[in-house]
Length: 188
Length: 312
Length: 101
Image (cartoon, rainbow over all chains, first blue to last red; front, top):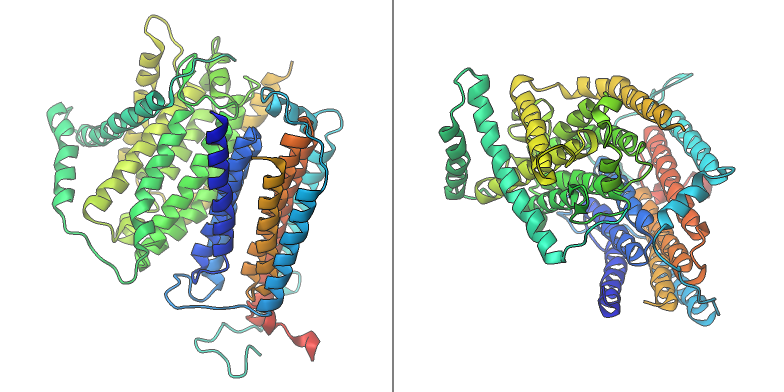
């Protein structure tokens, strides 16, 4: 691929990633929000492919497709308005958040533009995957082991937190099903 | 490994052409095997004509409308599903030195296509804004998580002897012995995954009749046709992958590689479509129990066997 | 596609994520903001790996760790949301105001 095509593809994916990322918080539907986030992640995955990080790009798309799928399931389960048929604004401290987000963007991009980073590109894309594999699973396997143990602990913790029945009986004992009409004066 | 490169338009043409012929072949095979299993013998003429007749019937049908659907997503979901079938097929090597897109991470590309296919099926059920499609989509996603794990474990096991995620390497590693002999559990588990992700036959739990058609309950006319076409295309891609990862793909004596791949793909297709006719629909809750309690441990066993064999 | 432009894009992703995580009221939407921030982090890590680190695999490892963090964040987040919902029928941050009183 010529350099021009790579640049063009990069800008398409970059604008796509940021735009869909922004739309996540501007849509009325929870399901749309999670798939817009997926679109943003897929765009970032495509940029990674352009940067010759082949394994990471595809792995990101692969993992995030499943993750956002689960996200959408929870969305429909918990939220009102999953189909986005009614307009919906559920925000607080909107102005403060916008200022904070913009400040984060300015600060980080100032670092990115002004700081002097070395210019040492990947020498040749061949063997990138193999070197990553050796780093991940070679010698002491530190990252692999710690991430594995972390994920195992997470699974156990999540099951303990969310399981129906615990040591002291059913988790929802004494709770009541959500009412069809909102309670007066808020939730409690 | 060094592979031949084709211009991108030729690759696209090969993939789209193969899928068009392949999905028609799946539909025809479906009809042929239906008569054969029912004891009516092999009636080639009828089986070849029936898909065309059904397509013509669907194209004459009126489009149904629902209240406040997401029209763009609804219209594009079949295209997404079919496009993912094409993406999945690009990584399958057509001869022992040529695949349309021979990624070094072919297995991961395949996994990404599978994962996005689940999203496509969910969107197809969610977008009409109707009850039964949404129930079908929900049920499919709950089941799909168990298919996806199985699929990755058996494919990684198939990649282990090759010590590579590239599919041409995986084919090359089967020169002496096919993976189906080396890892006898791999192919049957992969067939389960194939039926699951294409919601075919016993695992037709997304579009099943107990949900009045599931995700396509509201789809009619050309939309239904394109959805069924995409589903046939996906089944074809899965059969080609099964033939490649476990049956040696284009390897074989006398005949040229693509013909061997085609023969093996058809064999896998006959098994898949035949299973669809012979085995009844599995109750979803029972499948979840079997999937996590039996099939997943079997996939671990498969991985263990492959790992022990790969030890130097 | 230079290192600078890549870093600006990832900064924009982080910025949008910060906005979402701070402004949204629903737990699940807050998690989306966090994911978007991690998305920017992963992009920056891969950009550094590809253009400033001469191809040592460390940058890629950082991305893999970020992916694991995303998975952990989601699993624990949903577990907490489920537990809170069971106890209080609450799915928005502003409804959990016991500590304010």
